Length: 328
Image 1: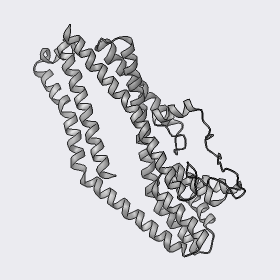
Image 2: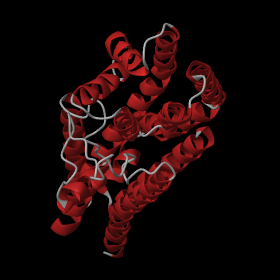
Image 3: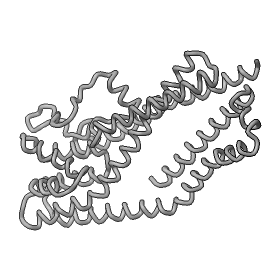
Image 4: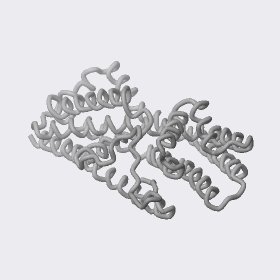
């Protein structure tokens, strides 16, 4: 009986730890938004990286091709909890379906592990299912966001090169942006096409470019916007500045790829250590099935299995965080 109670406490502690990560992630996003606001204030911009007021003195809001910025607080909280950004390129369609399927699968597995397998009460089973749904959806959205950011960064030097060649040929920057929107594939092409559409309906170039930087969330796009805006205000050789910016972005990308290659050993060690318990468990099951079956039938075995799963999960998360922080 004592073993069952200890198992219940262990599983409840695991659920509490998983649920505690939600406000921590929300707090991290809040700190990031504050930093973005501080950076935007340096350029007389609002909280979303857009100019706070137009030339007429009225607040600027761009809604062309975007969701309404005045979302209900509950909807915003759900977006932050699940890690969903409606402004992200490709944020609808298959991505939402994949996130929903992953969240449902994780919730079903968590409910089974807490209820039929662990024997926890219904409240704990619902808590584990909710934590699994949030973790599964966040995993899909986070991976999609990183993949889009990588493509945006990889294609950006080519986009700057097209704009530089267009400006050297004597055409204005806006025409160079139109060329980028027509020539480059997704996700850079559609993002610049949105800028062209905003310019077509009367939005000034600075506002449209700050909206582009806010949607991507990448510092390289902020550098590009600052370069173009300062050139429009103070003059200077725009092509040389953009050439230097493209060269800096290429070098930053090369350094990041080199660091990713150098960390291959650490990442491989992570995968090997994660697979080792399953390989050894399969070998034990082949040698002595009764010995391994006790982990799934005996209360003490379930306790050991839960502790092993918790330890493995925390170890993988820690190693992933250390590798990602070293590469950032």
